[in-house]
Length: 338
Image 1 (spheres, helix red, strand yellow):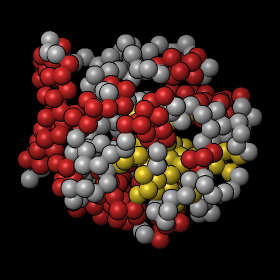
Image 2 (cartoon, helix red, strand yellow; image 1 turned 45 degrees about the vertical axis):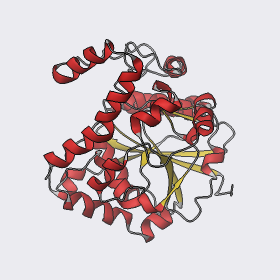
Image 3 (cartoon, rainbow, N blue to C red; image 1 turned 90 degrees about the horizontal axis):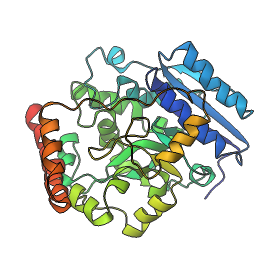
């Protein structure tokens, strides 16, 4: 662990719809990092309402922290003058690709965080992580070999989850990562497997330090036991069962990623192991009286599939869903975009 300064620089990106979720994440950040002398938060703003901005700033005032720095998010479609296909979420996620050009020039390192996380304990150790000469630190994600060719990677190349990224901005600029990302997206005509995360993987796979999974404890760790997860995802390389168990039992960052087996904590019916933690921070936030979101209405093939697997044994569900995830998704993307 090395000292990288007394100020921790944290970046979020959101549109107005997800600003409540981001605000609750920020509250958990400030609540659990009182040991850090100074925290600077930068928000890449995709048309967040003044009302929600006021609520977010009230959180900083509650913890006697300086207000966030609001930065107008770059619209990737406008930048490249083309329609960009959104794999999931919204176009605002692409704003993080521009960290080197929109943040203050004097920053050497930043921690990018997705909105759909809560911070469970101090980030000091993560912030001071030695990246071993790599441009970013991130979680090695569990995707099968079949995903890699669609973004120009080889069978065993690293694929990572971009929801938590520790970024060496000096190296990012030296390596011209922003230019490489824009060229990749442009060459793919804005249609990329896994959207902006796919672009980041394509450009940074060889330049990523994989930190411990406790720093990005994903929902898939909770929906499946270790053996099931390896069958379902079938990654060429992954963390040990002990490391994943530590991420489950002692998470520093809990990442409520999407899952076909469970709802997220701001949606009615969530049964995640740590849903009560998220709800606690919601109760502490300016959105404490806002209702939970209604589950999206499931229709068509997905509805039929969920009905089908609800009647099947667990072992079959893991095996069959794994076939679809490992082979079906990347194959459909490949065929659709020939």
